[in-house]
Length: 376
Image (cartoon, rainbow, N blue to C red; front, top):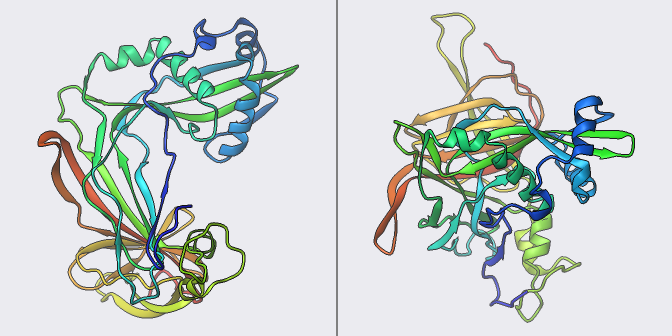
């Protein structure tokens, strides 16, 4: 790792998605192999793996089974839709290792450009050959080609123009989303007499919008969140001379200042009355988190756990005041705070690139030690 002066932020490059390779892979060019096609058509799967809930097991099965392409086939569900593709990181992830609460804020890099490429939901876990093979088979089937001929196209270049302000002890990064054609499908892998079905593989073909409608703006999501203890150990290890080093084992004075602790702060949560006519009652209760969230006004916010929202706040003036939606029990939650989106035109050397919606999102893990029923 490159050494930097004591207490300065560290940037780490991220590998985010496939590069802009759109050519098919030679091994897949012949279409669906006869042996695997027959197995997929005449045999019920002996094992089914859901790529959405068990991505690593799905990737392992595809990397192992699809090395021999005669044993691997692809079948889409035929339901193609226009929507935003998944979030892809652009630029660096920044770790602000400045000293304590009084250290300076840091900002992620800007003027970073990228092109959103075709990808699958397992692109980061399966080999490039396998990923491009599935994409090539789907395009060769004619489904995507026929669907997109009715669509309008646009460039998928993105350019980062707004930095994420990262406080000491926090990390920050930006993701992008662009309009795409989306579809799901299943891969079948033949292993001897066994047939493995890997379901729920998402495919994205970016740069398309529904004909007759305005092209969707690109979305830029700027995230910041407190570093974990492991991230501080990995990225903020400092020697006595003040240089930065990777993989430190012992806790250093710098790490001790940044080490996450259970800092107590308060949340205001309001309960809707069970009977009409009653006033809503609000309570301020203590929670514990690795870092106190920054002061925010005119934001939307929600308290979530396991993908479900337990309390929400809808863009009002003043401090955050959450309205309860579900019974809140003791345990780990995440407070997500979103500032009002900024809308602008992104330019590249003065040339308009596209319309954009820029979101600023703060994510604060916290722990609740109390119980709150849903109604008064």
